[in-house]
Amino acid sequence: MKNFSRQREAVLTALCSTKSHPTAAWIYEQARKTLPNISLGTVYRNLSVLEREGIIRKISVGDASEHFDGDISSHSHFYCKQCEEITDIPFDSTDACRKVEQEIGGCVEVATYTFTGVCKKCLLGDKS
Image 1 (cartoon, one colour):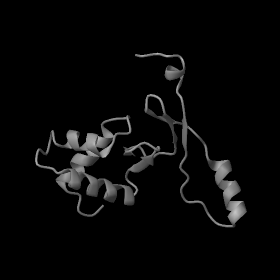
Image 2: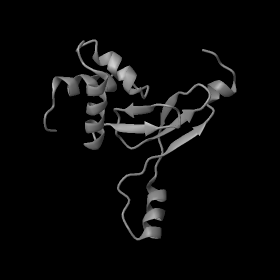
Image 3: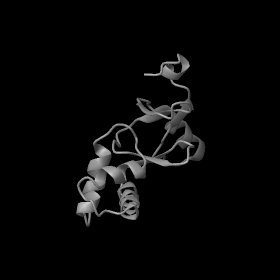
């Protein structure tokens, strides 16, 4: 990656320090712990560059914020619309990709899946 600045390093370090799929605002607060003068705009710009270069993944779940994932391994996400938690789930999309490729006569390069519903904790009313 070109121009790997201290700001970009702080943003990536903050994101990779959690499995919680944070928002840019959360990443900004964490990055400020090491770079107090970093701006929210700088965080957004660096997240955009990191996503464009395939180093991180942006997740849209239908709430008001974009979420980010430092784990770009092959997996999908489950979004609980009640507690708003995003959970990594193993999901092999190979069959779906093959079907799409057959339909369009092309090649699928990226397949992302986000499943939305209510998690077990919320269904059982667990407040912990």
